[in-house]
Image (tube, rainbow, N blue to C red; front, side):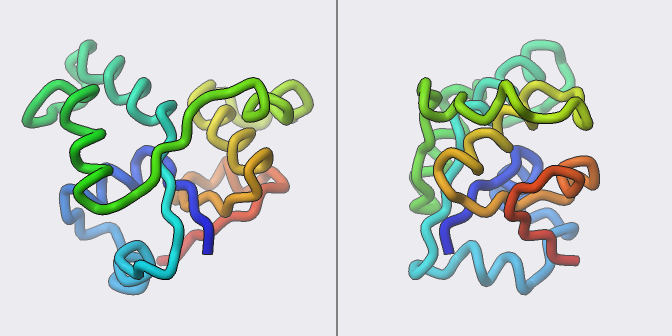
Length: 130
């Protein structure tokens, strides 16, 4: 599988959060799968940390890439190619970070891993395990 992690899934995974099912943790740890973390997520966390809404043990732009590398996840950059689906996305979800993740998943043929119910309204491959 080729998976793109929604920001909250990445944060839950690196913190060992109980909301992640054992089945999903097993999928994310399986070296047969390509797991991606978008720079959009790093950007989102950096803003939330600056606003005091996201406590992390170190600055987000340093800590999160180190965690991504530690877990052998791939980085997904923003590119013009990644934006190609953004314009045509219906206005179901107002969060610009999530809309960009949806566009990246579509452009790069990735399955988005998220617990966000609003994302399920888009025609993006979605992995949502309870």
